[in-house]
Image 1 (cartoon, rainbow, N blue to C red):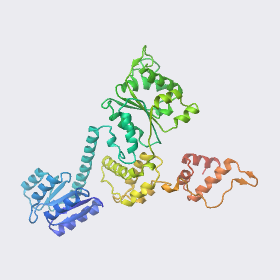
Image 2: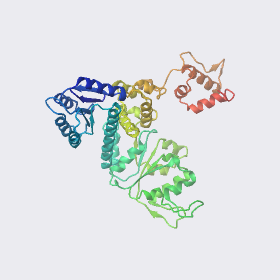
Image 3: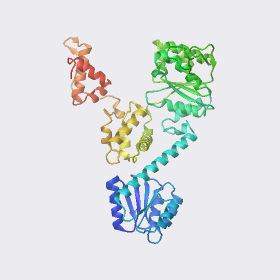
Image 4: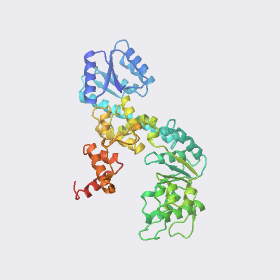
Length: 467
């Protein structure tokens, strides 16, 4: 059931005019009633689930609009009320505003004035709720309670996170890209005895190799060419709190040696400094790589791995916590509507089921991007499957196991008695994929697990450099 406006007006012609204005200009549904008692009954049954606004006439039978307004503002404080009247008495307007009405319009009013008022009121309501949510978040900043799925698909991992938060041991958070490793690390910090102290994030994969030591541990002025000022480094910025080393698997080997020394000795030595400086920092690191494999092939130091991996939490991909998807959908819709100043889109139940079937290879981040793009494409205020067909390519259901039949015909890797060269096989499979997807390169490359740029490059290479 979608959001709607409750129109309380005893004139049936005015009811029709208001309802038509809201539908045509804002695509808003309305319910109309002619008296205050019926309006209050509807509000009581609704309990704030769907009614987002009341448009209330001043002159009504049995109970006046002002009496109804007073009851609404005492009982349903979150529902805004716009008063309308044919009276020119400014005292009525003053009293209505005093009782809590957000605006007071005198009949006959211009359609543009009503529509502008309704848009502003609904936008302000959304903003107010977002501010309240942020205030709650700040009150319990970085809390597991704020994680969507804390009592659903993440409940087991939240319990592990809470155990980690009562200690200062290093934690390694693993999982695919986009599962929310940084947010989880923030929750561990927020529920630890270091809450209120700094939480410093470092993306190890984004630091140029020659600057890793300086950025992490600081440097003295003049320590190297370009060092025009002294910096304290990320570890000292986090002193007393937590440092989150994201993409730790991307750290160069020489920087790994220096990081290990800091973890062992609990002190940093800035570049160009005469002596080391003690630091009190809790370390949480994260990676989407398999660090055990990285150790085996020599890309990651084994001693550093054991130092960081005292307590490991492997966060699940979104496809393993599908029950959290409906809540995430609504969270991202609200976030987008506040950011862009638009009315939140409605979500039919069948769309929840459709989106729950998608595997979301980019996880939570992938879902958020899809919601944002779909809301941009949405034309009627109700998200439909078609809105996502344009932004989700190669959708896979849970039963598909990430495979699709590209061609029903038998395909052989043999040419006579010999096996075809790999380049020939690859080329033929790519052509089969293109044929299957009607020359849609995006779908074909995704079905083959190949980056689109790589797909284009390989096609171009075998086609004399042109497509």
